[in-house]
Length: 170
Image 1: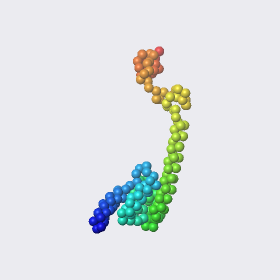
Image 2: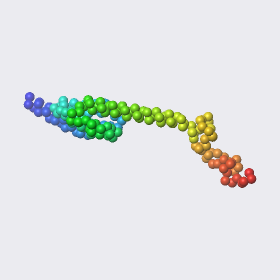
Image 3: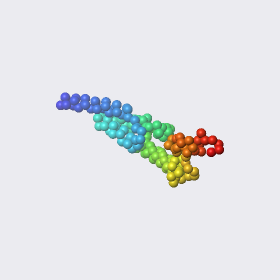
Image 4: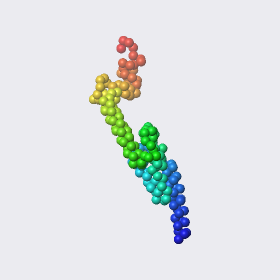
């Protein structure tokens, strides 16, 4: 019985070491949502608890605040300034970060919509306007003249009215 317990104790210690390392290097990934990051963090914390080490809410809250992506830096700062992190629960922190994430994503969506509507408004200017596009003029700004043959000197790369060999009386 003693050998069996010592073997499982050794295995638990080894698992705990691995989980501690995983917990230490844990950081929020770029593009990861608050819920996804909390799920990853709490999964590791729960595995540690199952192996006999309870991290406690304070340690987990501080770890999460330390390891958020830079886009949450101002949010983390405001939470640390306005709330006592020693009494802040994991659920309170998660809900606070979720609110900020939703605000950020709605602002990004609004900016994207503005860019799209602005881009649609300007579409066609400078490109392909001569082929039924919007705008005035023939849209020569993006026209490739390397295939154009001059009627005056029969060389490629310019129009007759731009011809360098053209005399004034032609």
